[in-house]
Image 1 (cartoon, rainbow, N blue to C red):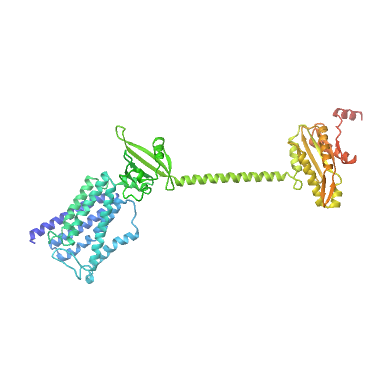
Image 2: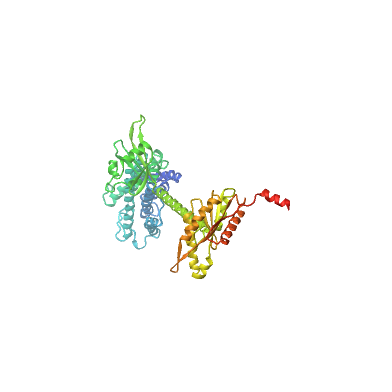
Length: 537
């Protein structure tokens, strides 16, 4: 090759390096955008590659072979930065893990080390290395690792960018197209060169085409605002949102759907786009969707998940329907929490009812006599206090010769007699009347609204019933009789103590009169007569 042609080729390569550096400067200014930093590093690698290759053609000191080998400082780094650029552009916000960093940087790191230390042992360029005047097409075992690593990253990048281009639309598809065009053209030429299919054997066209790569990226930065309009609308917002989004055309076919919606699609379909919604989502309830379209959010159970579905009509400027947007939110956790809350509330209500029942039982037990089951004196006091100022009568009852029963038959027999008498009193008590165990073998019955004479008649009936009822004690039948005393308010006194005292005196009179009888306490003398008697004295 003559010197003029070599100089022209070197000038072209130098220009490519300068354009790459200029584009890297633009990209670095926008380094906050996803993909800007790896693009900057990629352009710097390309600049190193093209500039060292230009120095090789100029045969600059220390020599052409030195600069040809030095191109690998940029060669091994470029595929890594291509992958990082692709990854950040298509998956913004996803961090690179330690394992991925090790996989990406292992081959470049070892290669840079070999270059710095002169390729000891010919691992990179020795052995079966083939060097023509101006290219490195083969080398040692590590050279093959470098080639495989680089093409693997480039192929993976092209695949991911192609999928992203297929899924997106509008300006985001054009951005992905710019990156694909800028990345694939020189690497395709490089692949053909490695296979030995070079139209110009003396030239490695790969770095020459990096001028086109740099210009394409510069055009994307300035014309398409490559990093001012990052693909957030479709990818970050729609594709990554937790809600399912499906866009339907007027005939019910799927135009677009995000990742959350794909989880509910029929897995047998390779691509749901263009398919009828009923086929893509066979478990969809058309009636539910129609209800959601006309009456607002509606819940739909799909694959064991509760979805709150919203359907919005998509209309053009003339108001004509152009399709529907179906958006659903997974509210399964919320509904499960609500159901758990309802269950907890129901359990709490049951527990409260149980507690109230236990409290009522405890209150009842606190005013009940444990032996007879009748109310005790504590309850009697509350009943009499409630009747203060009202008309009522009390019947005080005592079992005749109860001590003899205990002495002859034992206390167990005495308890049986007490329970039998209490059961008869409880049986004959009317609603609103209270039967209490007053103490020992004494009982008292409170009769609201009943005068003493009527109360005595009632008491006589009880007495006869008890006398006719024999209690079985130790295989014997024991006859039981009772004595009763009756008093009432307000006739026997204005306060409760006087009424009880009068009933007790009547009971004493019944016992003194031969037992097994009922006595009514005599009414006290009028207060005026008592006052006159006191004055005469």
